[in-house]
Length: 561
Image 1 (cartoon, rainbow, N blue to C red):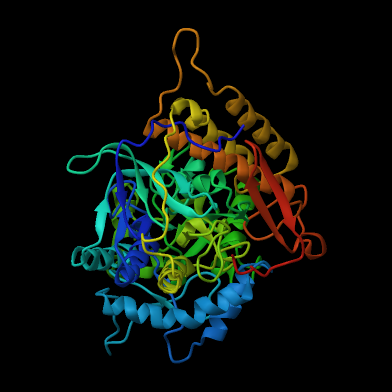
Image 2: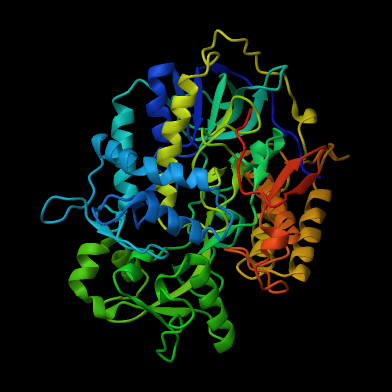
């Protein structure tokens, strides 16, 4: 059973705001900064302000900034990567508004790399037919964007609460979002479980990569926003499409947690994928070879690993030269050398790892979800931009563009201010919340998902995953045992319960979609099936059980009401 509320003590404190934003990556920071003119803004973040996924972004942000590029060409590349499931209107919004949004990001202080002529330097990544990736610090784009946005935040009067794990959504009698509950750890701020009362709630909580054993995501990416949305009754879409980055530094069998990413831009600058005999195995598999969309490259690597029995493949960038590595990819070079590999002298061992969730909380062009007053932005959202497979470097752009649109929508909402009826935080004790899983099962969840719902999937594996995840839920303690022992509400128990909720939803969607499309690869259904599956799978949580239904043959996201 999936809980409708997390077991938690009743809130011990309450704060108020006009808008509460959960998350401090590009989506959360831009939303907070753009919302500030319309009311008081509270930003809460799970760890420190700069510890989300944005700071780890290497390649850059995609936008049609070059004279020989256009939004229409960016649109075409995005639709191709999305394999028939992109919402064209959402993509058109992204690519049309993207260049202006990037220029406003520069106005906020972001310093992208420049050419000798002073123009923004652009590179190329997989799936792009033009050089349209703006980057900073060579391969430290996310860190620079985060720096600039945090500097702007510091100059504002936006209140920030760090070390805050969001728990559940508060709603009023009409079912409208009215705030959140959260657990805060840290000195100099409210502690324990509390509540934020706000008529506009924006989730920008990032990804869910920690569901898998190996991921490029930081440790905070435990799917908290998606799990909260499901418990709140919101629609969640396309969770089966988890993108695995093709080239993550292989650290040996048994490596767990966040893995160093080898940016697609390395291949964009000319590095080649080879097997252990030195053959470029992507040549002939796709017209773009190593620069094919990520799902194609990930599948190519996994197929070659199976064919040869190898534990990894190799990325050969020796011919790029020491100057290219030091000037263009200093962060990657340092990470490789830290692990005893010198890309200037030897190929880099690489494997695919969980990287990005193309699905998430269903949101319209203004970030509105199916719960009034609840918005979603960035990786936690599913706007329809990515379809079945995200195009490289569209993620930062999506967070940026739709954050601005959310702020504009909130500014037009007449009841955003706290003058509207916002109920006090409800009294909800441990007994009213759902069961929590023991934190010790976190590794088991990751093992099951990696083996049964990773890059390669089939009915047998997904059925096994479904059964084992259900057994975990059945074993969760719902009532105090005779000896008084039960899983205590704590950050670790809440996180692992969120991971379990999201894992269960991913498996349900992956089992339902009986075809191969984009980043969803079913070995038992190896072909794309537009007649039967060119549509979305929508997941909701009912009375402690998930339901996944077809949005048959529809690739248009409706305006949420």
